[in-house]
Length: 274
Image (cartoon, rainbow, N blue to C red; front, side, top):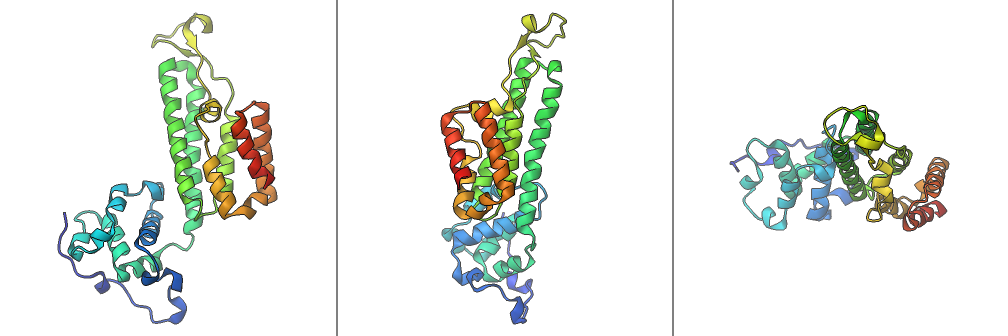
C-alpha cells in the first residue's frame, strides 16, 4: 500500500566538498534505469548478512520499470517496507540515488564474496552432517536431503553467474567446486524403511548418489562452469594467478581421475589453458 510522503531530498544531506562527489559515470543522469536498479539492490542487500542480491526482494525488483517511474512519487513509498521503498526511490529519484551511493559500504565487494563463501559452506556442512548420519535415515530421506542440497548449490552457482561480471569471486567459486569434487566418498547405505534393522546392507540398504555425482556426473548439469566463464571474460588475470592455477590443476586432476563427463572436463581445461 502506498502512502503520501515528503520528497527524499528533505532527508538527504548535501556535501559540497568536491572531493566527496560521486564519479561522473555514477551520476543519476549518466546511468540507465536498469543500471540503477541493479546497483540499488546491490547496495541495500549488502546490509543483509545472508541474502544475496539476486535473492533480495525479487518482486519489488521486477516492478521497478520506466512505467513506474512516471507514476506519482507517493506510489514509490510502501507502507511497512523500508527496503522496497528505498529500492524504488533509489532507482527513480536522483537525491535518493545519491544518498544510497554515499552510504554504500566501501567493502561491498569483499562482503559479497564472504557472504557467498559462507552460503556455499553452509550447504557443504549440511551435506557432511547428513552423510555422517546416513545409517539413521531411510534411502528416501537421504536422497531428498541431498537433492535439496544440490538445488541450493545450483541456485548459489546461478547467483554467482549473475554477479561474476561485477565482483571478482574467482577463488570463492574454485574453492566451492573443489569441495564438490572432494565429496564423492561412497555414502553408507541408508535403510529402506523407517525401522532399524541388523540385517545389513544386502537386505535393507540402497545406494545414494554422492554430491559430486549429483552435480557433475549428471550430464544435464554444468555446475559452476558458466560462472567461471564469466570470470574468464571479465577478470582473465585472476585465473592466471598461482593460487588459481594450483586450484584449477587439482580440480582438473580430480575430474580426470573420476572420469568426469568429457564436455565438463573440456570446458574446465579451457579455463586452465587461460
